[in-house]
Figure 1 (cartoon, one colour):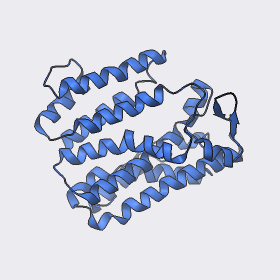
Figure 2: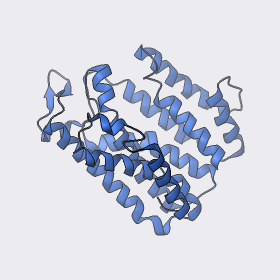
Figure 3: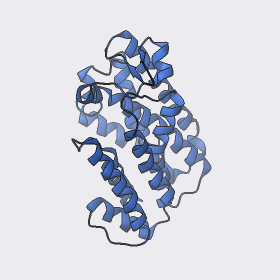
Length: 265
């Protein structure tokens, strides 16, 4: 399963950074559409000259991985990249859906690659993916603010509750400020992520032992959540991006190894 996990992670990294490595958004979208076609080719045993695609192909040829999860992950990123410039998710539910489509799907595929069939593991993977996705979107806000001049991943309903929503003729945006209002909005989204982590851990007793390594992304999610707490949910505090998710690389590795040794997440 480790080989499959590495291949799926490489695939996820490729599609996650498609828009960021391209100076032109249209080229970024072309990369994502290329991956949609590449998945179809992989499942028909066609050779593709791309390292990540080849790694994915070698795993798929020997494992029962659903094409649906991979296509769904890419399509979610295409939909996000295709949004009108001055639009944001309407609700926290929309943001949770995006997190599940882009993160939980990779966990589902990894469970499949390991031959793990467990409703409890699937439910836990859903919650871990949503938590990880939400927190990573929060962490990305300073990047989007500095590179694109806007904050795209605070939902409109949350922004409105904290006085951050700006609307016009058919568009909506978030006030560009790093004050108390934004910190409160970040706290609200992070609280939803925390609930998902708690729900995932409540399922731990019913999750098969062999599925626990797949759910270890809950650990970095908790590390990032704790870092946000220490900085009063100010995502623009540079200390959050120091080391690994705001803590030293050594301490991060120890946390991962501790959970792996105890077979917990």
